[in-house]
Amino acid sequence: MRDAFCAALVALSTARSFVFFTGDLGFMALEPLRNAMGGRFINAGVAEQNMISVAAGAASVGEQCWTYSIAPFIYGRPFEQIRNDVCLHDFDVKLVGNGGGYGYGVMGATHHAIEDYGVLCALQNMRVHVPAFADDLAPIVARMAADAHPAYLRLGRCEKPRDFVLPAYAPWRRLLSGDAGVLVVVGPGAGGLLAQYAAVPEADRPELWVATELPVLADALPQACVDRIRETGSLFVWEEHVANGGCGQMLALLLLQAGVHPRRFHHFHAKGYQSRRYGSQAFHRAENGLDPASVLAATARLASA
Amino acid sequence: MEQVAARSNRSLANRARARLLQMHYEAKVGHIGGNLSALDAILHLQSQVMTGDDLFVLSKGHSAGALYIALWATGQLQDDELRAFHQDGTTLAGHTVAGWHKRIAFATGSLGHGLGLAAGAALGKRLRGDPGTVYCLISDGECEEGSTWESLMFAHHRKLANLVVLVDANGLQGFGSTAEVASLEPLVPKFRGFGLRVAEIDGHAPEALDAVLKPLRHEPLIVVMRTVKGKGVSFMEGKMEWHYLPMNEAQYQQALRELAEA
Image (cartoon, rainbow over all chains, first blue to last red):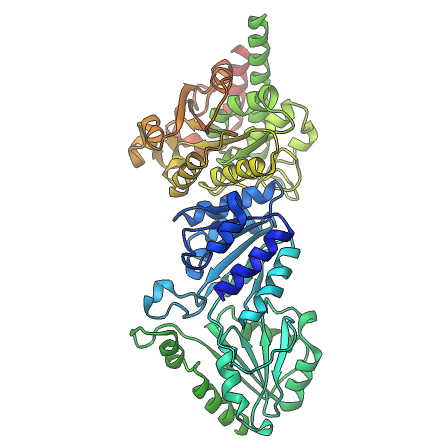
């Protein structure tokens, strides 16, 4: 998704003025943006706290600022700068984190971001965007640029099945129809799940939705999705994020408030490092029951229970 | 003529001190010592130095009282507004909150944030071709925050000539002296080691501040202001406890007498 993100920002740089800061990351990815932006592309160095404060300061005098690092470095180290300098002031500062979830795999736990959007969604004025596919980057970047408030963009690796034709971008999209519940997915894991469920008969698979904007707001939740949750009586949520502060909790609360009570609810989420062993993103997904085969088996079992 | 101006400045500073003490006494709150060490510089900036294009960033947010008083002394806050200091429903919180006064750009109070904000504002102004200087007041204790040095490195590397950093070096912090807590001194060579242009002045002498601000700059300027915590009140001067303590009636009256006799 980094390339798609870079291309989207290069396009944006021809349409409007903004400043781009990187925390010394982006090698072999952001060079086209650096070339396009000249003096407005700033390598702020390995100093994330300062980068966020500087971005907030520049936003205070009218600049839209985009800041970039790998996901754990963009929200963890400078958390107080995000909270105080950006969000309390409602400044037009964007945070972009590459490699959300277990994306950095065997690079180790310090490079994972499995609590990022839960933490950030707790802050005033913050919107979170979690693209599921590389194709989402252009419309998401356009939405972020048009909204002069804080935002976080969590990038990952696009896993879209080669021949699948995506519906037009929307923060909530139905990717597959199905009768055995509703599965709401956050993030690029949607690609693998899509491939897995596409081979299952419609009657035996859940309806697959992908959500890309958080926190989930009541008026953004499509009625069609809510109706299918009611009709099928089953809701499953998949995300490469811990349960606390995740989409699953948000959805459960919203549905309770709306008087929607599915008979079955299961939350597929990151649980950390249970075996204390480390590996690829696929390794961690499997250990957490987030791999497509495990999810398919679980939804089939739960829906028929 | 200069003597008349100096007397007038002293008179304004004395009135501001008295009003600052009144405001803290009526609100029954502390943080008085650091307000008194910073007041002369903030007042001089707001009354004599800054133009409408300039920006002031109070990184040592616990000196919010000194900023409110400087705004009052320059007619940018009214007397009755000061009575809301520290009260329910106020905008004059113990540390600045943003969005209600054009001279208070940022909510500060957690140390180590203001300098990055100031550097960003200075960078933004330069990118936009906007005039004006960004003045940022930090404390010496605040230099223990690593983010302060991140920001200094950035400001130096980006040659932010429209940035002036004032260090309220009163030598005391929340639970000890800066010498006891962090062997902070010598500060000036530390700043110079970052390649920064540094001046060292008496932080209670406005003419000294004028002198260092006057020359044309091609890089950020750091002004280490040697100050006295609790300046102007004998029993507060150089005493760490006045970082926190509120005054009782007897102390308040004594402080007012001392200011009247000064």
